[in-house]
Image (tube, rainbow, N blue to C red; front, top):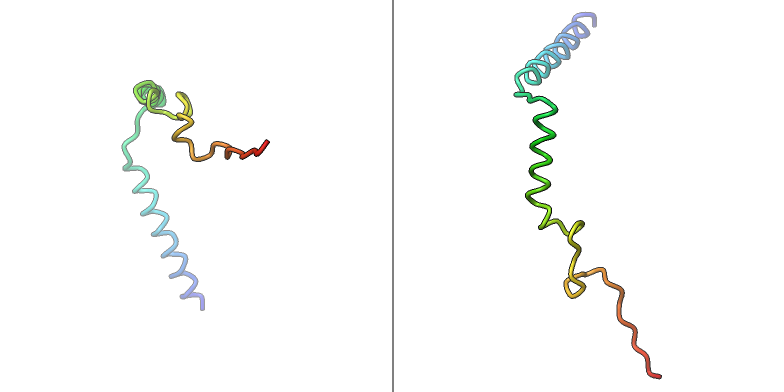
Length: 71
């Protein structure tokens, strides 16, 4: 039973080491550079953003239904 526990903990440790090595190899950039790139992206795409420019009422699937009145 002790051999099974040690081999199980060895497998867990190997997986942890593999994960840590993968995370260490990820290319990283400075936060200031990432923020500048995000800001530029937002500014370039602001004219296409429906939350900023709105949706024409003719294309809005969530517009309130028109009511019918007989009077």
